[in-house]
Length: 295
Picture 1: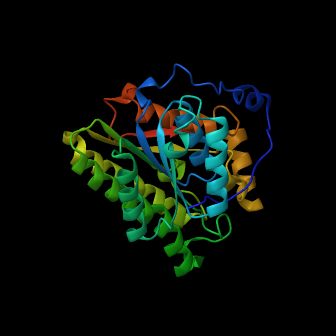
Picture 2: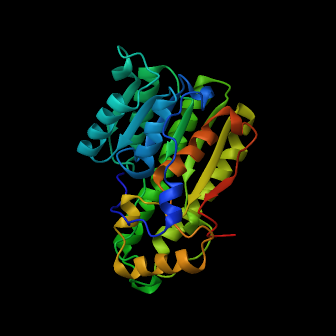
Picture 3: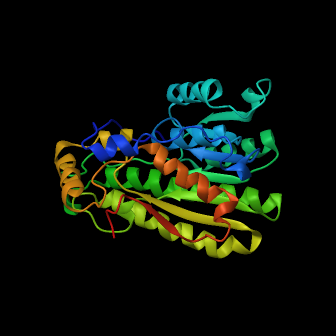
């Protein structure tokens, strides 16, 4: 599911300095070379940044999004500009794309079946598809419609459940790991937010889902973790109404330690770590990527 939308300008010297990240991954994440990784929400934001990084590290990718054009553009960009470790003659087959609605169980199962059929493996998965409610920052819990509550939870929670379940089924059939699944929660999954109840509830639930999966499948060498990003420069953050934007500015000035928004690439590097053998003894964890917002 393509995450909702837009962008904040840099608001500090810290932002401009910290965002000058090394985008060359030669020699890094070597354990991801040749691994098959499925990513949902891959057409933009953190999903796109993760796909670029993993491809640069030599991983083979199965990318899903609900929007065809952004996904196709993303795949083309990755093939041309980030497939530094892939044989130029085989790079097209090393990136598989699927347009599907993460809210549909049958479509998600088909995506993972297609992935395994195409690559013969599934070593990791990153479930990033997500949305935020249209009334965020505006409506309190008593004012939320049934439709908005269902939509946000169908994407953020049900979609994560369908994907995690399909990935676990495939991984179990493929045999003993190591394998890794990462689900996207949020700092909103770690605390309450005013006028954001559908999103907050869904992201709390993703943590519970991830921890249950970690307990149930660790003995098979499958690790499951959640990430909790804070204020990240993604289309979702940039789409927020003025009311919520003002709240975020207040957080940056008064609550967050680093006082800036992160770039998606900073989250992608944490995801790559959780997929790699460097995190081999980490499972059932929630990794905050929030610049000290909750500490």
